Image 1 (cartoon, rainbow, N blue to C red):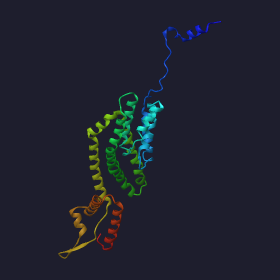
Image 2 (image 1 turned 45 degrees about the vertical axis):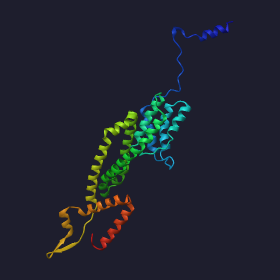
Image 3 (image 1 turned 180 degrees about the vertical axis):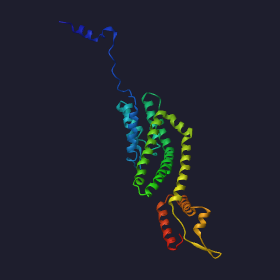
Image 4 (image 1 turned 90 degrees about the horizontal axis):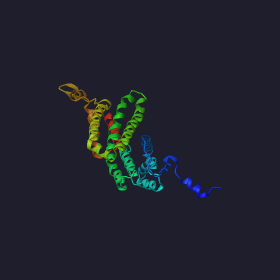
Length: 297
């Protein structure tokens, strides 16, 4: 019968050949993030950005939800994951498309923090709250103030020709364009990390883009006004015994003068009274009826 002490001592010895048993895996170490993880996070934001809005939190819950797949891979303990989630329950609201660069930067900072680098909680929160306002203004100006009117303007002639593409085109093209912009900015923010905001703003390319889009928008609005705002006058004046058609005189001075005057009148109204579109529609309707009855226009 063998001695139990001898058996235990034998089992405790390492295998022959000097090999040692592999160490146990450290479950607390962060897992590497893949491009698929970053894209999944963007898709969650794209779907939920405007779903959780409330007066108290606005986009806070959507931001936290899109970060959950990322944080679960970076923080492997319940305590660290809870602290990370709490950081992203702070008030947040920005433009859902151009603000995507903030999410990419935040993911990069969380990855650095999970790997042991000195990234204070205040730095993560400060980046979010500090950038959400500027990028909201940039996004609203480009997406809603420039891209959307341009895309709709491109399909107006198609719609007026009776094609159903004219009505479906903006609905399909605009989400694809802004979605592509958001996807690129999301990955760009993650790739460049905290330095991305300096690269974006210091490079000046956003300002150049806004200027170019504004110039293009002015050309488009001018062309659309000349082609689709119809206004003429049937008035005739008697000069030296001859009847002179007022419209012919106006066309000889500046073709399309009356339509462009109407457009500038609406623009002046918007500058003075703000975006009160219902009032503009009512005033245009009343003016059209009165001038038509009086045979002025």
